[in-house]
Image (cartoon, rainbow, N blue to C red; front, side, top):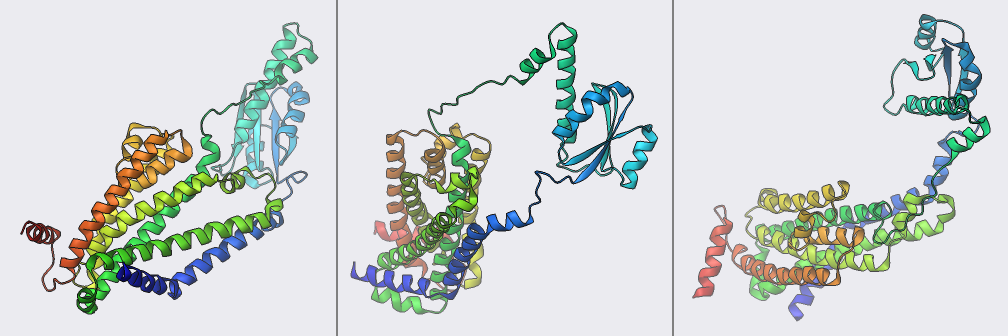
Amino acid sequence: MKQFFTIFKFELKSYLKNKVFMGVTIFLIAVLAVVILLLPTIISLVKPDTSTAQSGVMGVCYADESLSETVTPALQNALTEYKIVVDDGDRKEIKDKVLSGEYDCAIYLTDLLTYDYYVNDLSLYDQNTMIIDAVLTKIYQLNAMVSGGISPGEAGDIMSATPNANVVTLGKDHSKNFMYTFIMIFALYMVILLYGQLVATNVANEKSSRAMEVLVTSAKPTNMMFGKVFASCTAGLIQLLSIFLSAIIFYNLNKSAWGDNQLIQSFFNIPIDLLGYMVLYFLLGFLIYAFMYGAVGSTANKLEDINTSVMPITFLFIICFFITMFSMQGDQIDSLLMKIASYVPFTSPMAMFTRIAMSNVMWYEILISVLILVGTVVGIGYLSAKIYRVGVLLYGTKIKMTKVLKMIFKKDNN
């Protein structure tokens, strides 16, 4: 145990003293500070005042001029960003005015339900036809009611009536939980991928410098492997928590500037128990992949071979990440695939955490998932230590994992 703590402290100090580690952490915290503290002010400065400003001119031409009295005011109320100009010309003239830039866009109404919309370059975000359709449909329905004997006032009341819906969520609200679940999953993905590869790189670096030969003789391989992995895990957790806590602090300092922004509030109103689950699944998920990265790193002869050696593990982790992300975006949180992934050790750190955050999961399901993860961590940790002991002493030709495993099992049988 003394050897473990010695290696753990040495490796953790090397991370905390690393200029890149500290630089990235400080940079991310600084970016968070600027974004959370200054972004509302920046938005208010660059965002135009849409309450009174009009950004363009829309020409409206009527085949039946009697429509102008009711349609023009309704369009002006609905399309507040445009100045509505009634044009007496024909189709060709209104097209020419759009092409010349006199009108940003124009419509030619044949009747209440038939019109042509003219625009020079149709933007991907142009919603004018949707708004015009809604306006014309409402006017048509009102006219139909009045012609059927209903008074204009009664027809207006009928058209303006809206349902009074009271949404009672008995489970989890996906719209509120999606943002912070997405950010947490992505943070876990980045930290596990980054620090897992750092473990493999450090092991391979010590092996290529021949320092490993001395270390193996003075410390047990299990202590060395566990010390390196737990140190990198602690460093990653410190960085992750530093960024999240900084974001919470900066947000609370500038909370009033964000007003009632539901998107921002949904992220910072994270339940405490969910943070606990995040830390738990982060630790267990990280340990599984870090042990595998460390074991594979010990089989690399040169530092340049690391990327090739760890590629299968990286691909496995990326596949697990995409399973979770596609399920979230497809609103398939409780699909059969996600339920199976919640118990598979390589996918459960993200899959089960996502289900906990966005669905109703029974306590015994979480317990089973955690127990499987703990058992897998112990098993992979033990096997990785065995591979580590054999792999770090093998040099020369390319080392195959199958060869290392045969040597381990042969030795255990003897």
